[in-house]
Each structure stands twice: as structure tokens, then as C-alpha cells.
Image 1 (cartoon, rainbow over the protein chains, first blue to last red):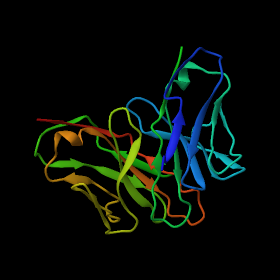
Image 2 (image 1 turned 180 degrees about the vertical axis):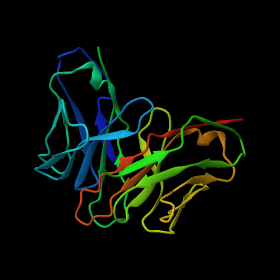
Image 3 (image 1 turned 45 degrees about the horizontal axis):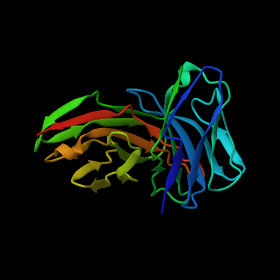
Amino acid sequence: NAGVTQTPKFRILKIGQSMTLQCTQDMNHNYMYWYRQDPGMGLKLIYYSVGAGITDKGEVPNGYNVSRSTTEDFPLRLELAAPSQTSVYFCASSYSGGTNYGYTFGSGTRLTVV
Amino acid sequence: GDSVTQMEGPVTLSEEAFLTINCTYTATGYPSLFWYVQYPGEGLQLLLKATKADDKGSNKGFEATYRKETTSFHLEKGSVQVSDSAVYFCALSPGLAGSARQLTFGSGTQLTVLP
């Protein structure tokens, strides 16, 4: 059971380039999330999805896009990379039922924009 | 909106010392509360959780009690080990039925345990 898998683990982008951060989970979780973690800060929610075909903005969505065509996959797209997007990105998933749950996190993608 | 406030770090302790990391929250309704741990180079892992007032979450010697009267969820461990060195995050999930239940995180507390 792989859990939540993120690729790539590291990436360096030039200003203005685009890229897609991949996230896949094999736990049949309905809910998926993208967070960014800046140094010394907590995690901030970028986008989330409550099921295939349904996405919504979080706290810091500007400069990002997402799609959810399947239950398993939740890619995050950066269209025009900016230095402010240098961060560590975490994907997470959770079971939708009840209150007795937590997130399962991927191992993260460390992105540097230069 | 919801928020979580953690004590400022970093925290440095000697092995076998007592650990407390303070966490207070602001939320409407009855949130669920969590502590996550992040080891170097890894993603966050759920350490413990509590879903209602006066619940005590525990795992690996760590404990935290959901105190609604003081809106707190302080993390404690009686005797820390070098292997406990990590960043600890307090988080809450809104207790709203049908919501996306997205977690709100504190800023994290870096713990270093010296041998």
C-alpha cells in the first residue's frame, strides 16, 4: 500500500516556466488537498477536492490550477513560475466520512524558482 | 476564521527531559484537534488526535488533552529521546458536517533533543 505518492521530489524552475506536480493516492480517499510549506511557517492550503470533478480554492490559490479527473489523481499546475512560489509542496488525502480521521501526506516536492 | 497558535521554537532539550509544546486554537463549533510530526526530509505524519472535549489523544509516549474551556491542546511527553527530534504541528479540523474538513495548521515547533 503506497499511500500518497508525489513526483518529482525536487525541481528547479526558471521564472516564467510551467510545470505540473503529480499526486496519486491508492486508498480510495474522496478528499484530496494541496498545501505549501514556507520556511518557519505552517502549511497553507492551496486547493482541495471533495471528489472526482470537484475542486475548490483554499487560502493561497493564486498562480496555481488543479484538476481531479479521477479519484486517485490530483495534479497541481504552475503556469508562470515566480520566485514567490519557491516552497515545499505537500499533497494529502483523507477519508470523507465522520470526524475521527486524519490526513495521509505525501513526502513532498521541493520547488525552487530562480 | 479558524486559527491555531503554537509556542515559538526552536525547543532544545536533553534526553529524558519533560516536553511541553503549547497549542491554542480559535474555531467555531466543535473542531477535531490533531498533532502531526515531520521528521527531516519527510512529509507530515499523524501523531495523535482528539475529536471532542476532554478526550486525550496518545501515541508513542506523547499525550494531549482537548480542553474546550481553555481552547488548548498542549502536547506532552514525560521523557524525550533523541529520535523525537522533529517539527511538531498542531492542527484543527472544523466540526461541520458535510464540510471539506480542511486542516488549519499552526506554524510548527522545531524540537531538538540532545544526547
